[in-house]
Length: 86
Image (cartoon, rainbow, N blue to C red):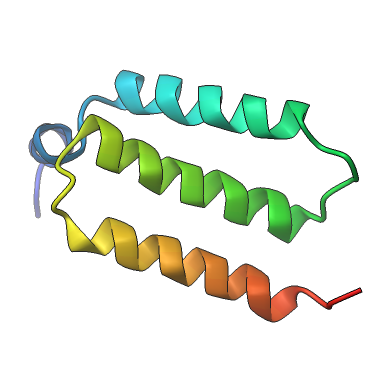
């Protein structure tokens, strides 16, 4: 079993520090939420949060990690599938 310290060190070297990511993600999320013109459903807020989290990983870490881009597409697809055009 991998020691959690090893995992955190490896992830930090790929994605940047947790603190950097938290600051970046929360800054983007707070700006997005401050600009709302209608209430969001939980799935919308969570999809936005996760997409911004993945963007933060790209900005703070290695932009060449394809899984971040793949995950962004996945969260967008999940939200799309739950959204009804009005």
